[in-house]
Amino acid sequence: MTTANKITILRILLVPVFVLFMVYYSQPPHKEWHRWAAIVVFIIAAVSDGVDGYIARRYNQRSRLGTILDPLADKILLVTALVLLTVENEGFDLQLPKWFPVLIISREVILISGTFLLHMIGVHVEVRPRIVGKVATFLQMVTVAWVFLKLGSPALFELALPWRDSPLAVTLFHVPLVLAGLCTLISGLWYIVDGARQIGTSQISH
Image 1 (cartoon, rainbow, N blue to C red):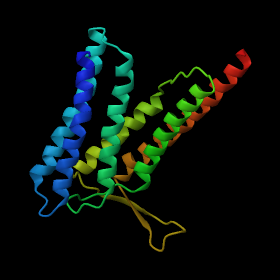
Image 2 (tube, rainbow, N blue to C red; image 1 turned 120 degrees about the vertical axis):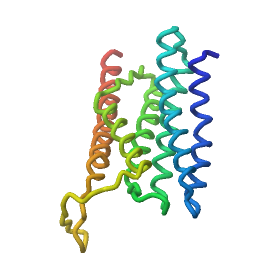
Image 3 (cartoon, rainbow, N blue to C red; image 1 turned 90 degrees about the horizontal axis):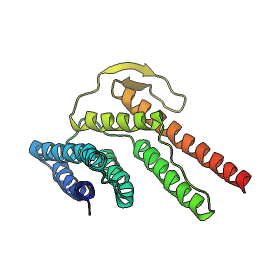
Image 4 (cartoon, helix red, strand yellow; image 1 turned 60 degrees about the vertical axis):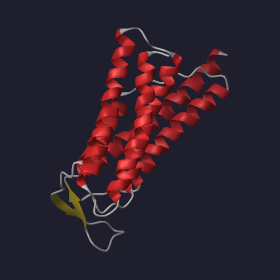
């Protein structure tokens, strides 16, 4: 097993440690060192993503196992953080809306199931990373960090919605949150379009 793969596996093993500190922090009296410990573990795991990628490229340690484990480790870490920050926790000033992790998880399910389906019908799958997908991931991380670091959320304006009795207070926190949601949605739709095109190309070539 390559060094890059060992670092990736370590990143996966850090997820339960991260969850443990988050669970401890969710219980009164909400000790701040538990939150900071969770943040440190999350940062170490996130930074290790760049480290194993650099090692794989620099020392030619690319492997089939690495191409599977690396994105899997990233998704496990991010989705775990999103779910935990959606669950009610009085220790945090902000809480992610439930639609946010649902949207992100749905995108991943569509991508994975779509890839599996294309393989099953004999279509060569080529996943093309798009800039909108990278922007979505960046904004998701910004949103997670915003909640983790308790940056606050000053009000910007109020928005009247027909299905609400009272106007919705739009805050600064909604900016990265909504942009992350939009980019995630666009990225998911783009993958669906790519999959349909690859099916069409495959049928033409046959």
